[in-house]
Image (cartoon, rainbow, N blue to C red):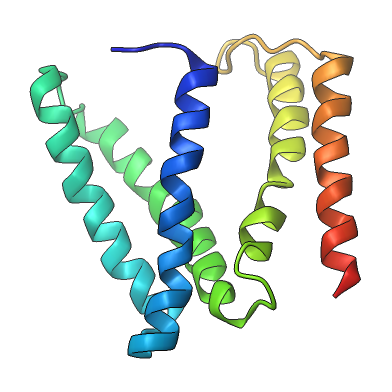
Length: 151
């Protein structure tokens, strides 16, 4: 399995683009709400993940305690957060804006990952603060703010 985080991130980005565009397409042409679209989209992701994992021989069953914890996190953070974003897309002046705004979370994840490692190093992986990465992420978020505030 390819392990280049940069390549995987770029490839994933290009695959996300058509997914986001289909939200507005189905809203306009078939009157499918963003929330209902998300339900079917999430089911598609689940089935697709099973199909993509099948040839890898990767174990898909975890100890039940870990599985329940991940499912709970997915329901709370993944389902709720994505449902709100998918619901926002058809109403946004530009379909990309809700997705772009959510990318501002990267600065919060960056800061939290550094902080959590220093506070709870037993539970979180090592993450060092890097001024160049931080400033680069901040510039992207500043660009998002400029676009969002223009509306």
